[in-house]
Image (cartoon, rainbow, N blue to C red; front, side, top):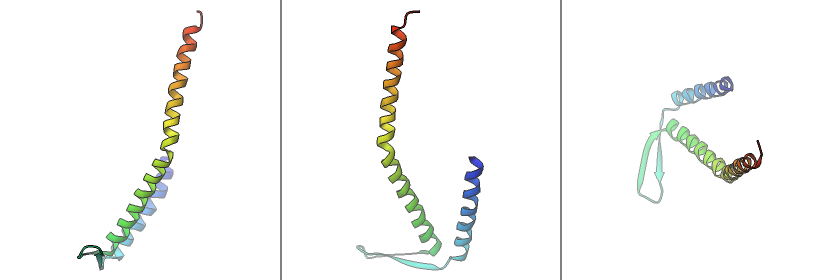
Length: 92
């Protein structure tokens, strides 16, 4: 599994580095409600947007599975209680 992770991550990292090297020209970001402009390299804007998207997606999945994890924890505790009760009721 770790090999598969490296197999996917390494080419992605190489593409990101090549993209950053080839897109160093400055762009201006206008922060609309405020009278403020930011000048930054294009690769920072693009990779920052990609990172933000990944983080939002990960949070979305985590919150979506939270109910399932809580239910699993509750059922696991109930199973442990029932096992303890079963072992107490068994004559040796």
